[in-house]
Amino acid sequence: VAPEEGYGTYIDELVQVVPRTSFQGIDDLAVGMQFQAQTGQGPIAVVITEIEGDEVTVDGNHPLAGETLHFAVEVVEVREASAEELQHGHVHGAGGHHH
Image: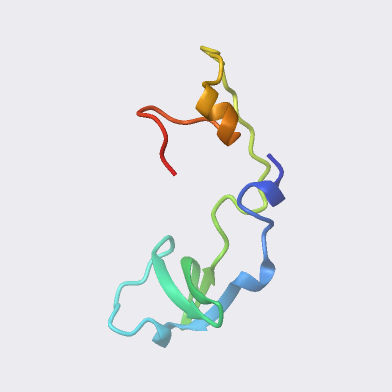
């Protein structure tokens, strides 16, 4: 699966260096910690990727952004579509029709 069809391309602008004081009330910052940041487009999850002195680098990209995804699958069963599935144009999961 290409990045554009998976978790998106890696966006350099989502990596920012912010002052350590942005993390008020948190004394022990560590690489890998996750936070929610507010942006003009709403909240975004960020992860700390580097801490250098009073500067903290955060990354708002999904961990798999920019990656081509590869899946190994095995088809174990094939069945005919039900009349209702054909009418709706999609498969219905276990337990019937849920939208």
